[in-house]
Length: 82
Image (tube, rainbow, N blue to C red; front, top):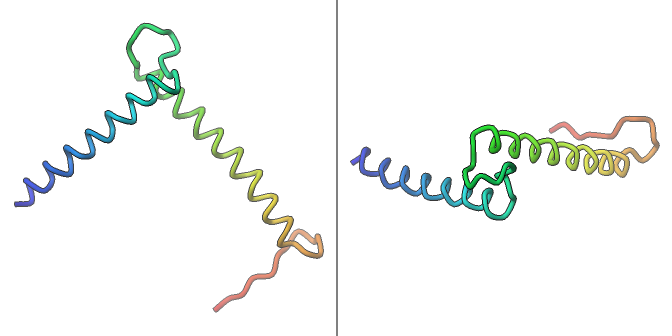
């Protein structure tokens, strides 16, 4: 029973993973050398670039939020501890 469940979910996961890789290849142009294959190094580079992009966006957004919550501009914000 557990093996069957794992097989079903494993299949779903693999299908999702293959869809993600297909999207990377076709829409995001992760195949930078245009040889028709998505190499491990190309996928790694694309993932690292997206992680960096997300980190930069999150850092900028967090700074805006903190600035909004730091009403007296002392570099601190009030928190409630329950």
